[in-house]
Every structure is written in C-alpha cells, then in structure tokens.
Amino acid sequence: MLRRFPWKFALVALLLPLIGCAPQAQRPFGPGPGVTAWNTGAQQAGPRVRVGLLLPLTGPNAPLGQAMLNAAQMALFDQGDRRVEVVPRDTRGSPAGAAEAARGLIGSGVTSLAGPLTLSETAAVVNVARGANVPVFAFTSDESQAGPQVWVLGLTPGQQVRRIATAAREAGVSRFAMIAPDDAFGQRLAAALRDAVGQMGGPPPTIVMTPARATDFSGAAQQVAAASPEAVLIGHGPAGSRAAAQALAAAFPSGAPRLLGTALWSNDGTVGNEPALAGAWFPAPDPDARSRFESQYSAAFGERPSRLAGVAYDALALAARSARDGGPPVGSAFMGADGPVRLLANGGLARGLAVFAVRPGESQVVQPAPVPGAAGS
Image (cartoon, rainbow, N blue to C red; front, side, top):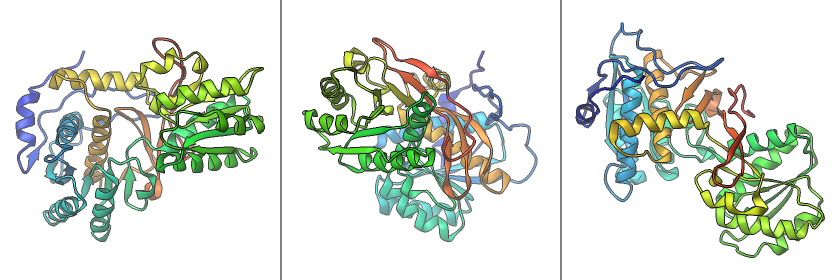
C-alpha cells in the first residue's frame, strides 16, 4: 500500500524559487526484469545539486503547466534524495520566455533542465543549454530536437511505428502500406515506417498521403489495394481511421489485410465500435504503469492527470538523476510513468510500448511493453 504524504503542503514548497526534497516517499512502480526504479533515496551523502524545471505557468497552457508541475513534484518525492533542489521557472509559453528562463537557471547554477513544453520553446532552450553543456530533458515529441545532450521525452511517431511494425513483422508481415495525413505527424510516421521496414529487410512500403481532415478514403484504399500489402498502418486520428478502415474493407472484398494504428486510438472509445477496425493493433504506453501513476496522482491532487503529466514525471526524474550522478544515465532502463524507458547516446530514447487489439468497449493487450534495449525497440 502506498504511503501518503502532505502533497498540498509540498506543492506550496515547490512553488518557491528554490526547494529541497521532502522526506522520502515510497516509489509506486516496482522494477521489472532489467529495469531500475527511480527511487535511489539511500544515496544522501554529498553536496546539493540543482535542477531547472521549465513550464508554462502563465498563458493559455498554464493549466497543463500546473499539472506537469504536480507530476514533477511527485517525481521529486519519489526520488527521495535531499541533495536535489528543483528550481521551477515560467516560460510564459513562448520561445523567448523559455530561452530567458533557461539562461537564468543556468546562471544560477543548475546542472540539468527538465522541459520545456513545445517544439519552438525546446529549440530556443537547446541553443542556450548546449553552450553551457547542460543536458535537457524536453517534453516535446518531436524527434528532430534530439541530439547530443538533448533527450525528447514525449511519445514520438518513430517510437510508435517501430513498435507496431516490429509486432507485425513477428506475426509474419513483410509487405506494409500506410494511409497517413499529409502533415508533420504523417510525414514523420511515413519516414519511420520506411526506416523500420528497411531495417527489417522488407520491400519498401506503399505510402499514401491524404488531407489531414479527409473523410473520403476510397481513392487511397484503392491505391493501397493495388500493392497487395499484408498490413496497413492508418496514421489518422480516430474519426479518420474509422473512415479509412471502412474504405479498406470495401477495397479488399475477400478480406482486408491486418490493420495497424497509432497511440491516437488509445484514448478514444469510439474506435472499438467500428466493425472494420475489430482486431486492429496499435501501440500505447504500458497500461499497468500508467494506471499506477494516475492512481497516485489522483490521490495526491484530486483529479486525473493529463497525458503529458507522465512525461513531466519522467523528465524531472531523469534530470534529477543526471544532476546527482554527474551526467545522464545513458544505457540504463527505468520504469517511468508510462512504462519502461532507456536513455541512449546522442539524444536517443528507447521506450517500451504495449500492443493493443481493438475490441468493443475496451482494447485488449496482446503484447506487453518490453524493456527496451536499443533504438529500434
């Protein structure tokens, strides 16, 4: 049973310009095989270290920033190391505000940074942090920002595609196709699928890009059918995926190939109500880890956390460990809020994702989240 702590009082403390770690809390996530828990509270000797936390605490994203601040606070308690001091700073939701906050934090002596939130803010912070050799654990899901001393903690298109393509390949699929929106997300999915299939030694996938808000997928489905794929990855959100699946069912009268999706399906119950998507597979964070994180967050703050709150939890935990140990824990796997993660060199991050099958009511786990061992995991 989890130990409970005076979170409301802790929140007041965290909002101060500089805070220390409160008494150690028990880590809710037990480590699995090859996975280390975040809690290293026994290591208490040594000088204090400072970690910067970059969040939008004012402006339109302030509610999200507050939820992420709450999650970062949980990570701080779960770390249980009194040497760690966290310095939160408001980015004001802008690149200029994020860069200014990062400069101030680095000038005050922080040795690692958790955040900021968006792609443009991250780009501004990276320009400041790299010159000072300060590692950044950003909340964005844009892999283009990753690089030496910069890790992207959001769930990326590449991670999703690698996981679902690997699962399909293990099930005997070698010929892939994709229907995806012609936007930044869809382009990243397409690039990731080409790369994943190439690494598996399969023939180049058939990629059909459609308008982001498309409702008629009959033409795209016919293009896909002409290539006779064994699996089709649908990169649209729930509404577009339902329409695309119906079009694919019509284009393959003798039986559609295996349908695959993305984590966009994970929080939409309507996907399971579409007969054409029955049995389709999609990747998503480890449900057990996420359930435990949400339960602890809800007990502490009286509300369900946003999806990005888990990213803030992991980023703060990594930033704190990096500051404490003198560098990022590259090569080690840890159980985060959304399942196992492993930090790789030069900004790489391998994330263990579960594979779900679409079912009416609630999707079913068909493959648990593995402990990631390499960039392609």
